[in-house]
Image 1 (tube, rainbow, N blue to C red):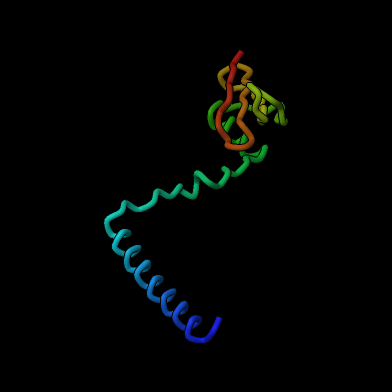
Image 2: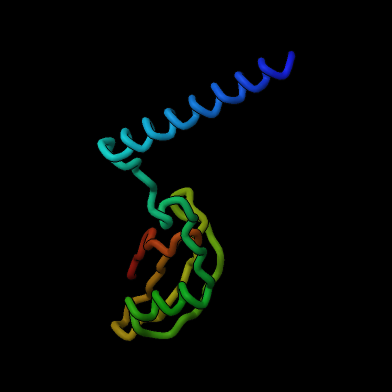
Amino acid sequence: MNKPTVFTAAALLLIASSFAGSTFAADSKTAAPAATAPAAATAPAPEISKEQAVEMALKAHPGTVTKAYEDTKKGKKTWEVKINGNDGKKWEVHYEIKSGALVSEEGK
């Protein structure tokens, strides 16, 4: 390519990009903003510790913890907490490790 052709191509590119930028700016004023996912939805929930599971279980069913260990319930990895409840029942409570959600509780 000779110099005038390179200069002309560069000038056309500059003009085209300036029009594209103004068109984009005009469109962005009328267009709805793009939906962005909340940070909480994209980031995985923090896992709960055994101590947190015990604390939640005792809050729900006061008593004495006899065992707390990792288990699987309803296809989910859980903390199983066994409690001799102050209400006279023996409680078995399962919290999902990934989210802390209650998976099951049973009092006998």
